[in-house]
Image (cartoon, rainbow, N blue to C red; front, side, top):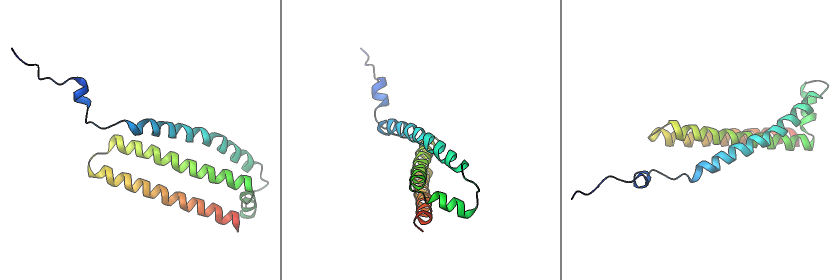
Length: 127
């Protein structure tokens, strides 16, 4: 009598990590992409309606509450979308210690650049 010592497919799959984040990333990417569509359309139409594109005109345009709010929403949405997408690529294609370093660097850079963008918009808006 021989025992079948082969693992079942479930036993083979157990311990290979969980899929808890995948759905959240997928939905986050889709929601941020859909949210950016009306923001881009609104900002482009508003921008194209300007008489000129000199510094004074752009500054006055950005000082409008609706424009600055839309620009802030767009920037935050864009950086979230970008960070989520880069994270998925790193998780899928980079392995070992490089993966951890890449994830930390990506998150750090996305946060820094998002803060710079938000502070810049607020500086123009509130000046």
